[in-house]
Image 1 (cartoon, rainbow, N blue to C red):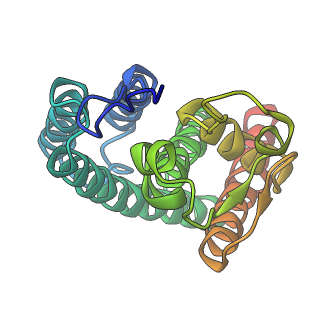
Image 2: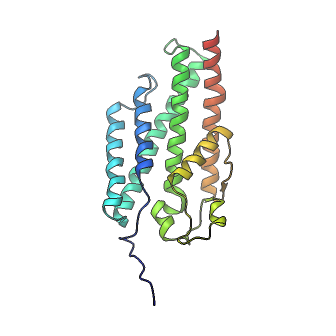
Image 3: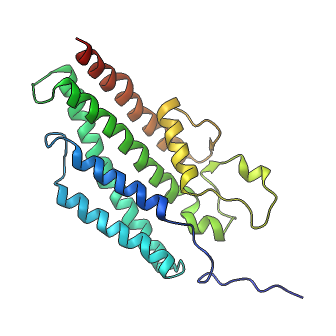
Length: 222
């Protein structure tokens, strides 16, 4: 007796609420940044946030159809591109403010802004890792023949059916450990793309933590 396999349109999809919460945190942090640090107007951030909320809501509503997955993927990448550009420009402003103070930011604003930029960087890279690895979340669930960008230890230890696959929280943990330890703790990068992204995140985190935050603490203590 052959068991019926569910069609791709009726397969369950990965829960999106952690992604929605992450996007909400990014929008809040961008909103509370000082105006001189924020590159893009607030309305643009809200517009992109609304677009990505619609995109991730369509995936479970449509049962993970390819069209909704492509829409979610491209909107997420656009969101990360715009927010990442704003984050890097804000980090550049903070570094310049540290070496050549203009009086626009006091020590407390420099400290809080640098922490916000650091957290935004973690969340943006988590979204990139989540959407980039093996073609996205649903592609990982439905086609295990794709070559992975990251090697998770759980993939070799789990013999259950259906096989274990990483979810957004796993990529969020990966981004967090990279930002704090400047390297993944238990996940190995395999592809060239993953290694380049890992290097970029480590460099951004290093600049934020060791340069901006340390200088802000010195200003507060003086």
